[in-house]
Length: 229
Image 1: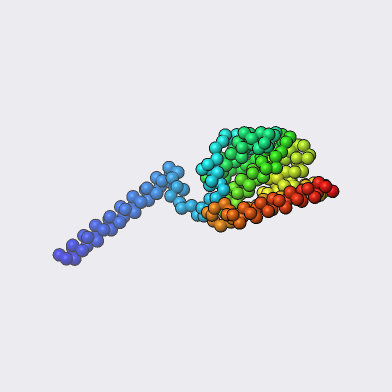
Image 2: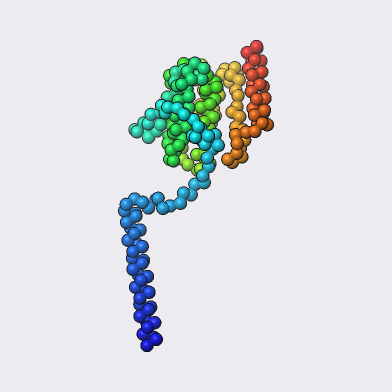
């Protein structure tokens, strides 16, 4: 009697195990067919949020002027002809805001910066765009994501040399885009101050701000020296 009971119990559990496995396979096939398979995979990329971009995404308000090029699968940010906080603040701020909006995408797109119509440049505006672009590059690189920056240089030679010498192509380390020897001689470069590198830290303290101010004063002195020669 005991042996018969154990045999029936064994058959019962074997049948339950078989049905469970069958149901599991059916559900797995259904998920795969419906295209939900990838949603159950854990993201293997480490999460890194650049503190500057985190702040801009929360606080910065503007108008997204970027356009999406479906043919080349990329965002185009057209730099206004007058890129200046002083002479054209609204368009300049909206240009920088467009890059911040694009940075919110979970899948890094290709970004194309069009400087072709540039006729007037504010170094402060150029540096602000460079800082945001460089911060975005650092964030995507830390997350091991694929990204691509491209663009078109200004048609006016003077601004073309400035952008190549100390603009976005210089800060993003674009290979093969170098200023002429004359530009290297007369343009005084001011390297971006990258501030505090600690993960999720505040963007610099008093010491870092003092260091940045000192670097700026030294830079202005260098400019005056070159101009006086």
